[in-house]
Amino acid sequence: MKYGVFAFFSTMAVYNGQRLFKSEQSNQTLWLDWVKKHQRILFLIVVFCSMASLTSLFSVLNWNIKSLILLAIAGVISALYVIKVKGLKMREVPYLKIHLIGISWSMILFVFPILNEELNEPVLIYSVAHYFYIIAITIPFDIRDLKHDNVQYRTIPQVLGVVKSKWFAALMLSIFVFLMLLVSPGLLPNVMFYIAVSAQLVLITLMNEKRSDAYCAGLIDGAIALLGISYFF
Image (cartoon, rainbow, N blue to C red; front, top):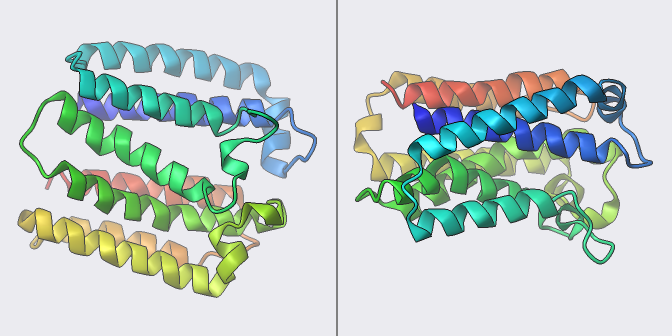
């Protein structure tokens, strides 16, 4: 539970912090325009979530070198995702954006707890499985951003098109399910697990360029909670 609290508040702090940083750019989306108009409240949310994240982190941190290095790498990725170095953000490097998201989320949500607790778990398979899951649920956001992203970013929808990208996302979900069932046979009779994956598959299938931010941030992001809940069954 404590790791879940840490993941929640750290994600909220990083996500909203990145939005605040991006809201200063000249190329505004409707979402970033809303962020700019509500900077003060979002800044307070970032401060509160950062403090809550640090508090929950210190309550679980065992100070072993592997987990500390992992947190440092995740922090650097999160910062350089929106901060320019030599005129370029990491998210602007062709083909790299979606992998940064998948890797950083996998590290925080699964690799960090396993390494920090020094558990005898197949950390590589768990992290790779959830990397594929994050890739799958991030593709709809890239579909939404097609009209805003620079063509040089070479996101998956820019390269494959919308329809093929949704098929690719479905493939990523399938690989995720296969790997999780391989490493955790206890999930086989877990109906909630299949409901969670099926919900994401339906949302991905129904995605198009005209879907709102609420569809992505509300439904697709919200459906991640179903997967987390399924692990308690």
